[in-house]
Amino acid sequence: MRICSLLPSATEIVCALGLEDSLVGVSHECDYPASVRRKPTLIRSRVDPSSPAAVIDSRVRELLARGESIYSVDRELLLGLAPDLIITQDLCHVCATSPDDLATTLAPQPSPPSVLTLSADSLREVWNDIRAVGDATGYRPRADKLVNDLEARVARVARICANAAKKQRVVCLEWLSPLYCAGHWVPEMVALAGGEDMLGRPGQPSYRVSWEQVLHARPDTVLVMPCGYDVEKAAREFAELPLPDGWADLPAVRNGSVFAVDANGHFSRPGPRLVAGLEMIAELFWPGKGISPAALGHAELIRSLV
Image (cartoon, rainbow, N blue to C red; front, top):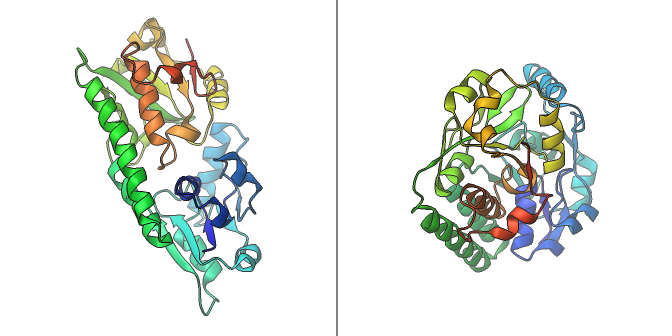
């Protein structure tokens, strides 16, 4: 089977099922495992990802207001690769190309390839998407095993964190300019790790919040996780952020519990590495419980911002 993946999480799923050699094309953001960067790139973004957050937000709003896509698909390359299966998503038209973008590209084809659309907004639905990729590729037994392994790790974290003396009050910032709290599976991850997401809503999209809401939440921990950013970029943008009066009085700031995390690898993408993200924040909330102590030693995954 010849597979084209138009989103990073699908690429990670395909590779986790042992099908990397079947991947003939990927998106411009597919970077894990590192070897997929050598695959032909099918997507181009009309927004410069190296721009400051406010500039990215403005450009995205401008394109969407005009009814234009943020992404363009290289039609000639895609058709030349002759895929049997294309995997895309319908969760967030800002994060990756959509079925509408793909339909425009494939419309003239008399015998278009199969298209699998993923749209998970919870951990359970992420596991279902893994199974769906397994079904579409004929590797359902491998998909079931992968899901079982991931669910076992999630259950272990939940079991350890269930005995915490009190829940951590947590704020997760998915964008910094303007300010957005995280949504979809992130509040669920916080809850499994023994915390309470004070702003995010499980299974619901992220939404814009104010600094007043952040201050009112009185978080014990703040997780800075701009969508698509690694730790270095998240920390750099946070350092340039004008913080409000009252910020220094928050419990999270007084206790040194403001962290940038690797959102790009472990929180933004609905794929297998979400479980590593869960283990990471559980260790941050409850150090010493032996959940995932190695995670705290990786500067490329976590950085203290206090």
